[in-house]
Amino acid sequence: KLQQAQEDSSAPATFSFEFFTPKTSQGVQNLYDRMDRMYDLNPLFIDITWNAGGRLGTLTTEMVNVTTTVLGLETCMHLTCTSMKLETINQALDSAFDCGCQNILALRGDAPLDGSEFTGVFHYAKDLIRHIKSRYGDHFCIGVAGYPEGHPEERDVDKNIQYLKQKQDAGGDFIVTQMLYDVDLFIDWCKKCRVAGITIPIIPGIMPISTYDGFIRRAKWCEIHLPDHFLKRLEPIKDDDSMVREEGAKLVAEMCEMLLESGYIKHLHFYTMNLEKSCVMVLRHLGLVSKQQLVGMDTKPWRRSLNPN
Ligand code: FAD
Image (tube, rainbow, N blue to C red; front, side):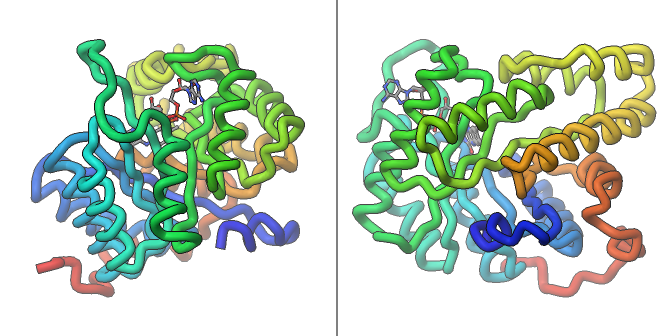
């Protein structure tokens, strides 16, 4: 689907939504409801993140099962490989395979917070990709992570491009990037990727702005550059969340337009943070969702049975 969308130059841009696994069962139920509503916006696919470690990893596979088989959403399951036994990795992959999920975002996962050495069978994401390929052939469409402004453990952008190429060569089919706000840096990186022989689709990670503090905090956490015009327009209204959301939606939509105009991008991946309002505002500015799609969105009776039990 992604490939088709990339090849059809006259088609409008497509988009996808990323959700993370909630901590409580009520949170999970609320998220299913939200996913069902957001499905009406017509995303190409949705992602469910993987939390390294026991219970939440199982929750990812459970949620992928529900979104694929009950909600009927094209789903991409994130899977990390650090500190994981081969058996656990295979169980997660088998579970995705069995429920009909055909998309995996293959990741290494973050380094242990206590600074200890990595454990587990695979060291890098490329090792996990090779494993998926050897076990399932071409069944899964495999996504990989890209870092246009460097990775916290390796700031050198060119080295990261070499590593990205290795992930493509191992079997990666598309790239989803770290969140960004600096279009110039991003486009420069896309050019370098293409020169380095990276030919698979590049999908920018779009983080809508809900509050000023959240915007600053996440950018710091991911070590990405904030362009001056974002700060100039948001700083004076930073204490008014609703104005920040409104202005933030305009800024992010302007950024998306520039990305799409660059010719490198055909698809936008939204980090929803499990919220819909700010994403919808950006998509409205971009003309990618219509007013009709939003009418009654909050009150509509559910089309599907949302209770997996
Ligand atoms: P890799 O590509 O293996 O890279 C890891 C580090 O090793 C980097 O510093 C890289 O520069 C270096 N490296 C890579 N190859 C080589 C090599 N051959 N030689 C030397 N060094 C090398 N984390 C989660 O826990 N759950 C999620 O669901 C999740 N989703 C994500 C989604 C996206 C789109 C992105 C961008 C990140 C996500 N992450 C997630 C975070 C990710 O797990 C971390 O950024 C992690 O530190 C790196 O993962 P990777 O797959 O990019 O690893």
